[in-house]
Image 1 (tube, rainbow, N blue to C red):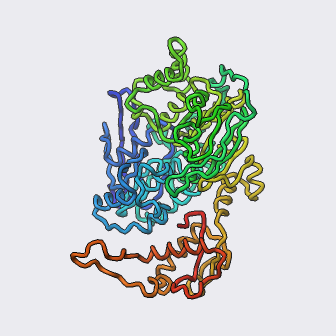
Image 2: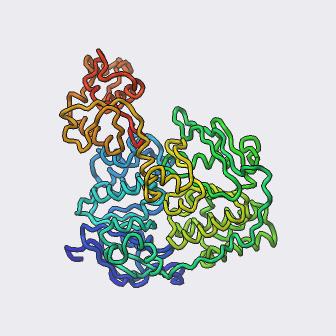
Length: 591
């Protein structure tokens, strides 16, 4: 490998199933150092196999390659029984680097979740944690296998900025993605299909941003919309109630933390109702409560008029549910999963066999029928989950990010099925992070910190915020959720800040980071309260020492107190505090 290049492969070949399936077919590739490269392709095109070959997780059948890496796998590859901080410390020890994670945690929005188990994080937070671990140690080559899957639009923008900032123009980044709107953020894009490269070059040379997705679809074979075979033979029983799905003051609390606060909405027959919001907003928690998988702290939900709290089994009989996380049986084959769910939904004998055959034909499972579900590409896992959710013709569908990780053609096929089912009278409750998909919804409820902050049709939300696209409306509404608290402008700290902070200024996440970093470098604003003295524990006097408090502790406590006393002038008289000069609270990441 030359000094100019970071990756070189020549005639790379990788096959599976004894040579019957070719994942990478005589692929030759050269990537220069310091570039950010996007890897784009359909499900099963060979993206993950190529990344695993480069990362040394698979051995090629033929050909050669060389690289030096930091790797983030497609599947969450950290330890779910360890906390966020313990995972980071493990990777730091593994890579023999320091344990100062404060900057990366703050940028990824994980500072407040350091003691939470990784398995308890939302899908988007898991992706951020995996990315932070992959970036640790400043590797020369960073391989990221769909790092933005399941991540909201605001965070997706920040992820790419974070990676580019960490790379600093020195490291090479190879980033596979299913989001076409990310393509123009890369220096180079590689489009791969059936194990072969069909385009490599600058994204703007292939197509402008507005037509990039259409051009990729054209290169990979095109898409022709047809009548949905899922909805073709679907028959909908008459509804006996005005609203087929209702959420009534749903609340879910974990200790002092509210995952969902007084959530209420009503959905009519045949309506597509979208739940949008950042990661950790409470969308999946709402889904679980409405399916009877999690008991509400208070409130209830009704499915086809049946109360989910009083009669969960009867309510679930009306549902088809597709979870955010792949929730089928990984050690069963595709055929066995389909047969199991057919039986679970009461489809036996000839009826069950016909349902399995129909789903196999519609979703293209023929070559994967005898493969374990765990071995499927991510896009095919999503297809299998959707097939199991719709095979019994339910009148209500709950779909939690159904298109995360699937290619652009499959996304269109999914939405063709969803819209066609809604026309037949099926009620659909769906979450998505693809803003172009949200345009298909009849109404949208925007979630933030467990509560609804906006509801309306896509057109209404765009008009209210003066946005051209729904993604702009989404970002604007989220960033407008900062709450008003006294914010005293302190000359000398923020004199050169691009947007001087004035009383009642509304801060966004970028402001919070700037405030915190500047306070850290102003000793008189970050010192311990007057009169506070460190006390060390004396031998033989165990447990009597006063707990030592760090500067960030006093900083955070001050913010909490200023929030509680929002109506009082600052600084408070005789407060004894030396740094009550700035007080603020913002919804987007302020803690």
